[in-house]
Image: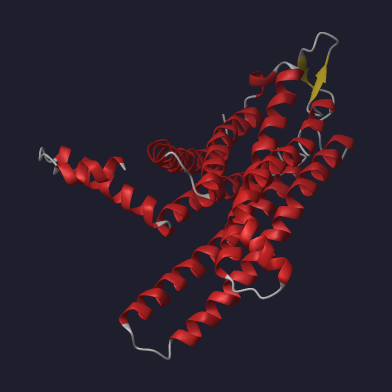
Length: 321
């Protein structure tokens, strides 16, 4: 029987996964429907589709990861075990890159630039986005596919590919596979992490200065714009907190080499790592006016059905737009 702390942890992560699946599925569905209807798509919506789709897959792998840690019969074949690890690291790195490019896009569009190079990037960013997304997939592959050439250290694998638990020695010390995994994860996350922190810092600084300048005016429209800037700053700070917390939690999961000794650390790390893709999807919905409006209309639509009241045709149209 699992220890109580792991049961609580798995229950919390299960809730996070459900929230993440709904949130990221909602973002993907709304943007794809708008893309099909309008026959065109903005750079931000394109990034959101890639980001939410990768996180949807990542949420599924989070559940599978928990299952593989404490119910090892799931991955009796070495190939299955390694493919799962590579897929999980791929979607994790890809989602980090996509969220980074989203902040870079906002940074380039919002910040006033005078340098020639930055001005050229601002003018060409829309055409660069598809190539940035493609490059992110390539980089994520480079930092995840090498896992296919590693041997799961928690198993002894026979020549037929069948694995069994190593009953003679528990993994209590570092070995080459742990170091290899840590290196791949760190390399895959380091560059998007640094880039995201730099662009976020630039965004926060620019928006805060702009807010200070606009506080001198008492115009209602300006006050509304200040509120928008404050909401954007809060969302960026929340993203950074979730991003860094998830990074540290993933490192701690890799460093956990003994389940019996690190139960609490593993349990907490799983909860923190699972919170990032779930909570950030909620933040994206809240700060995006289009997604927020569709979500509000859908909630009103379902509320009317629960109360046996026919929603107005306008509400139905807005809920589907």
